[in-house]
Image (cartoon, rainbow, N blue to C red; front, side, top):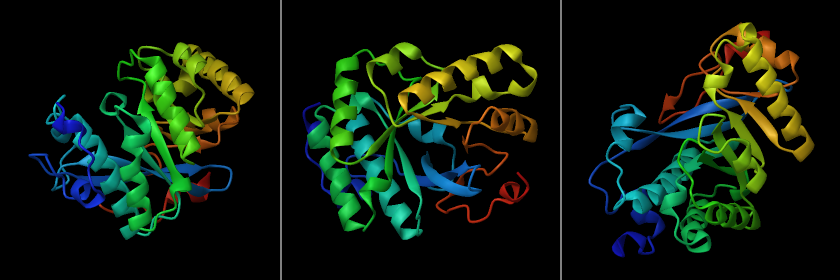
Length: 254
């Protein structure tokens, strides 16, 4: 386990040092409905030939989690730079892979410098679905990331173990509503009321809200009428393997 926490160089992470499997990145846009533009792209792991995330994540274990987490960051930044991404970049991180926030962020800073990517454009996401038992540790990670100029987000909000208790401990820049809350929300009064309440809380706290998993025009229209501005889902665009979405037809008709 000690070796897993060895400081890794940027190029080592890019080449997947210490991992016995390969992976690349796909990118899915988050859209800004107010400006009808792409607000950010989320980096999503894929197999070397475009295989789904599950095939990659199945290879991640306690012994290689740190190296995988570091490699994800560098690969996402390198690919974003190479592809000419000029929006925000969302990168998922694993709290359990971070033993010291400042030490573990150094490789990210090196990657941003080496690949000439503006670090202020990086948004780090923690998935609420992952069981977080050490809230103090996660809070220290968020604090260090903000200190270094990164933005933070809670992904899959409403799907995991902590819900509003997690939000009470630390307030990120962004929360992304889980798709289970969004599905058929236009015809589901209960889900609609719950999302209303979450959005009111976030407005008071100055947190931006992204609705994930938008698959239909009805879902989008319902949430847009509530005042939501940011959206992500197949209705707009599917993830693109080792590439970027350049045009979103749905943006032209919203």
